[in-house]
Image 1 (cartoon, rainbow over the protein chains, first blue to last red):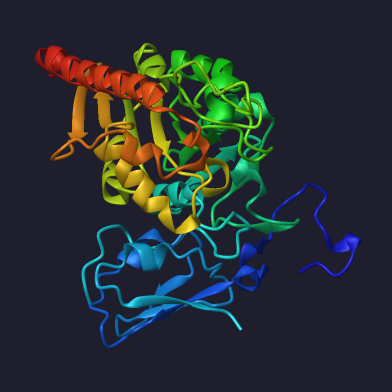
Image 2: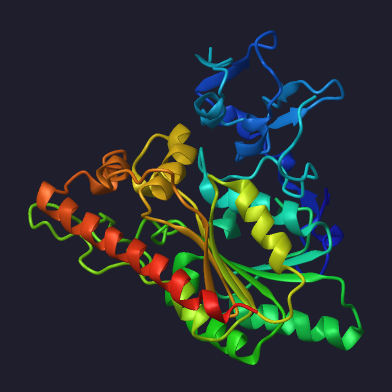
Length: 89
Length: 301
């Protein structure tokens, strides 16, 4: 991240990942995965528009709450119904 | 660990500032999965142009060029020409525009590019209005839809003209590949891109991208709406390869179009009479598509 105007390039270049935007603060409902029930079909991973669902080394689903906006698509597409949307506190 | 149906590599960053349940970003995500890292993207003013947030952030891991509204396809042609001059031939150049920037404002540049046969991929992600500026009617807005410039109010002034058929316009340019796809069927979209990406000439994709904000539905229904658009054949899935039509996916049983319309607030003013007209048009388009596929079959090589 550039500290001052002098550090920036002369032509506009985008040099930073949008991941610094913590869009998780937008969320009003939060997805919770029941890892016992989940059969790792990755349909939720496939349809997440915020790239906020990751697959860890063991193959289980990890939700990135820094970026998840709580749209609820993962809950809607889950065939096992093991994702539940709960109200943020 | 289960099997993934689309490539795992992620070339889109999280933290983009798209609305909840955005269909357009899904189209971008699947496209990049299919094309890989050696890709350059050029975009007009559209929702995708604001996704990165404030300067100097980028929501993609590939180069992204932001150009004027009319010039997406022309700038893609230019990038291709520059790459050719430098002798770089392993990069895919993509023009990625919304329906307004493609079907209305950018159509002249796109037509020029297709006519010259420049080796680029053009993707029109279709959210059926100018969503970025506040849901104004575009050429791709379907018959019967409410938008802020076709307000229903007491006069019933919804859009009275059908949706512009962009695939048909592109097929008329005699390009090697044109296809429709939907964000609700990523496997189909990725497969089509994989198939077409190495063809020589202009390739065109029309991607159906539901928009919760503009279509007035709850964000979790994005995929459901996409599936219904396919099952009712409001948005059929087909490809046109050198003028030969092929329906890539057929619904097992066609659902009535009302199932699709009733979920969206932008169609809530429609009475039974108007729904009947929409059903008739959808039936006609579907029959015509099947007839075209049947008729052009004999021209396949």
